[in-house]
Length: 332
Image (cartoon, rainbow, N blue to C red):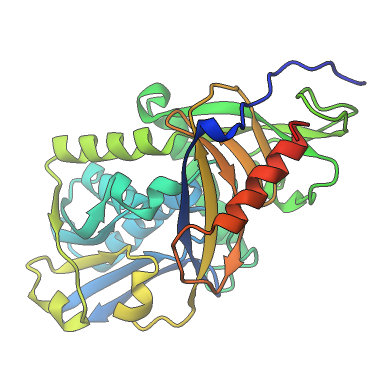
């Protein structure tokens, strides 16, 4: 049955543009790397390779990494975490909740990291779907654990809410996103309830995370739990031997390519247009063209430029992103 328009259109005028940003997704052939190994006298746990769904998977991989650690080291061991993006922070949180003494070593943390650029919609995209390194069933278990852990948080404090997502009928229909039980299957619509040229499509409800609030709340809770974040970077694995902690959890994402010589890692650049915040109450999603109403910015994306390491904003791509969304809403 056709639906009448229920939502307002965004204001996509040039005057509302705040900035154009670029970020590099930490993708990996083989998908996630979650495994333990010895590094000299240290026990090393790897937790990276999240691609374009770091926030989606971070709580689940934190649980998986902590479970690995329980199998490898003494229960009272001190833990060093490398990296303070969302994966490092959530891993520190999980280990702290399990009674471990945790110190994070990172060059940047929280909203200073690339994690702050994320949308972030709970949707497992931008990662290899077969995940040969960990197996598809294990991946789905991690995804389920992640969703459950997010649901247990104080939703308002962490900036988590459910929003309707609308996709036009011409968008790629990725059924695998809805077969794991964490997201309800979409409903077909004769007419999308949004402004613009009349069109059919589909809708589903999904968890949306306001990135800056999520990261800042994680850091606040870690500080209250006695977790220290030390500013430090590493250029050689031998430097890790000098850390006092006997166990290390590596959450360095793309940094693992050079530090641990993981040539399976590769970049996928994304370009985003940040506009002044607009409380629209819905999300538009069409693969890597999307609109997310973050509380600090209306985020327009994007692209998935595999193999591109350059993280400076691209004005031509940004112009096309703006033009795409203006056409979508009939604003041009």
